[in-house]
Length: 391
Image (cartoon, one colour):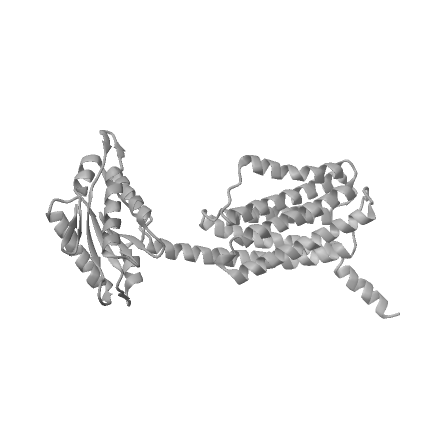
């Protein structure tokens, strides 16, 4: 007899409304650091979307859990906000995965909130809430699918993130299934059953876990991006000098490796005559020509000014010289539009091949550079390989 009141008091502390208010507060609390990170790095747009979705969900949940449930206007507004929140969370997941969402797609996705809010506004709150639960579950599964596409970035973290989304989706599907079974389409009260309790608990766990994992994954992605940027020539997108020499340091090139050194002919004259913007475009065109010739395992770098290097693996004298000649020919056929009409450029190349025994990259590069100077001295716009020339 003494224990009964304590049990009732304990039950009241974890009733449905308290759990959902706690879930709403968790969502709002996690949205704030997301927004803070986004403000400092606007390129991570998915953070802004996720935070906006969470704030809408938090507002809707807290409104419905604290205000009279028989006020259909309030209930309709609350669940419409929550439905839109899930749409935005899904769009944010697409942004994280690198998928574009057109304006028409966004409009169509937002229209899914209509079969949630409209029935509730008309007094059929049970039906509208059922539709909401099934839609929420679907959007959570769809969001998990988007994140799963990027699992190669961090397999274990991404698997846990997707698991949390799926478990939360199951809890929403359970709520919808219970309402469908009860078939009480006009309730005038908040649904309160085992599925709602399960859903509230999963929301608290899921929101907290997803928020922490999302911030961690974004931080790891930003760190990888910064490392990549430090290794990349900003103008051409090729490796920079430091990245090339770091990649080659501490290892000898084996027989079959080749190094090709390129230099654009009369590039200073192009800059002086047409301006640096045109000069930059000429450099980009040459980088494009190099990419055409690249195979898996080959490296291409801009090592300074108008100087470029190719490192070829599993090559031969014929393959190395023909690759250099192909790059030279593609670049020579490229045209850049200027105020004075179309212009083109030429390039010279020197090829050095590792033939008999292993050799340091620096040594092979020096031989390629020596061949390059012979190409420049013998008329330019040609490829010189060791002591032989390919016109």
